[in-house]
Picture 1: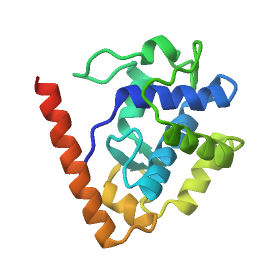
Picture 2 (picture 1 turned 180 degrees about the horizontal axis):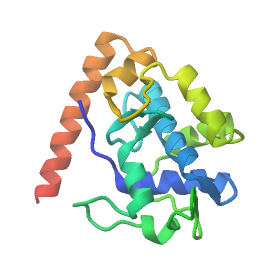
Picture 3 (picture 1 turned 180 degrees about the vertical axis):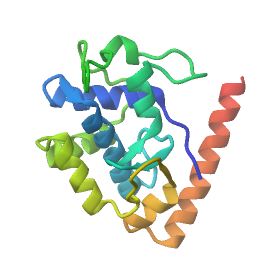
Amino acid sequence: MHIRCDVAKATEAACQFLRRAGGTMSVLKLVKMVYLLDRLSIQRRGIPVVGGTYFSLRNGPMTSEVLDLINAGRLWGAEEGQWEELISDRQGHLVSLRGAAPREHLSDSEVALIEEVHSEHGAKDQWALCDWCHEHCEEWSPLEDGRDLISIERIAQAVGKTGEEIERMKEEIAETSFLEAALRAR
């Protein structure tokens, strides 16, 4: 089961986290915050906010497409988005908000989840957040090198979803993915 990364929501979620952090954040922390947002959303709503491909790496779990956006400003093969306009290029290990944090694609419930993740983890530095993920994200696999795919099913199991709930999630995600593909083909 896979759900495409919603670049508009990824951009807006990153902007919301950056705004709450005073405008600048380490790349590692931002990647973790967006991952934890999707994890909490899967727990509460049965679907991620941002979506994408999740991996275990040495420093904990992350969303691959968010790191790609940070490193390149856009995703290969995707339509141009607002990331480059709203979020600075990497300056060493930091990124910054370039202006206002828009909210055209995020629902009220998604913004509430962002606020909740920020309230719980915003005061942690990137290393404390990595340690927290290592201790609390049982879907994460400890690695010295490389990466290991984390399925949405594995995240759902880790946050306490039942087999029946996971099956319903899979059906809803398949239906949503089908509808998105049909709309893109238009």
